[in-house]
Amino acid sequence: MSIDTVQLEALLSEARDIVLIGHLNPDGDAIGSVTAAWHYLRSRGKFPKIILPSPYPENMSFLEPDGDRILICEQDLEEARRLVAGADLLICLDLNRLARTEYLEKDILASPAKKILIDHHIAAELDRFDLAFSTIDVSSTCELLYWILLSTRDIAGDPQRIPLRCAESLYVGMMTDTNNFSNSVFPGTFEMASKLIARGVDKDAMQEKVLSCYSVSRTRLLGHMVKDKMVILPRHKAAYMLLSNKEKERYHFLPGDSEGFVNLPLAIASVEISALFTENADGQYIRVSLRSKSRVNVNRLAVRFFNGGGHRNASGGRLYIPLEEVPAYFERALDAYPDEEKFS
Ligand code: 5GP
Ligand code: MN
Image (cartoon, rainbow, N blue to C red):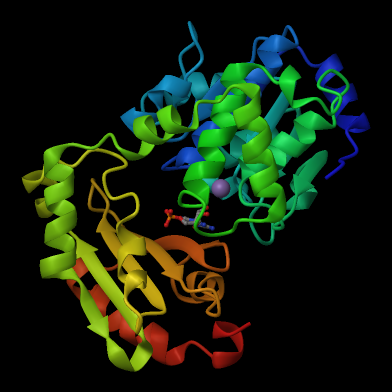
């Protein structure tokens, strides 16, 4: 995949104060893409800053820049706002709407900085950026960033020139967003993986650090959810699970612990849609995670009924109702979901 990077090169050359911004509840692709961009920009002599709206899972901390702290809005919003206001280039990664930054939408719009988007979600807000790289024909933002970097002047099509730490971040973002090569995998995804491994990324080490890193209590919580909480709705070929704050406390829940739970019911032959509803720590809303088998579209379901969006087979959103009202709401949403959208 060859990408025109003329405008990008110009913006990068001019920029002094670059800020890289990811989305709320950052996942592997969000952390992978901001840190990959950081490592790349450092190799070009820049000193970018990273802002994430909320904390990221501990298992991703090895991707962090050395000697530079990732700024978390929920810990220091004033500083995040100051950085955005003072930047001359803002690069948003892995988010299609500025609202996904939760706290910074107005600040980003008000900032005099040039704005770049690098993202792989449906319906990105292209008109809010000076330059946008947006396609859904890649596995992840990290994959898109890989193709962009290959097209830059200094990498010049040679993956061996990608800094190793950058390559690791790219690999981890792609690996997590594809659920370890099980969905949204394109021919180019394997090509990228192969080139990054040849570059020196230790695939087994990445997998162990990121996917085999959980506590005993997290695995017990997983068992509890599948055994005691999974509800099957045969008429809708759907399954759902509710995760309350009480359960999170009982199982010493840490950010990232429920990663992957929502995929498990899809292993059942008769289940085509799976949902995980998680009470937010401050109890203000319910986080919604939706997954589907390939022929079913959950993006439209997320947009229509769950104040969210995402991808065809992996979407998310929020509900502002008590947890106990969620099952009835979910069934009503499935009843009202038009077939022409469900199978679109
Ligand atoms: P997850 O279920 O892993 O949290 O999210 C799955 C996908 O849905 C991700 O690609 C994510 O970007 C998208 N997503 C999750 N939450 C939201 C949300 O609140 N709004 C929108 N627009 N997309 C979301
Ligand atoms: Mn992503």
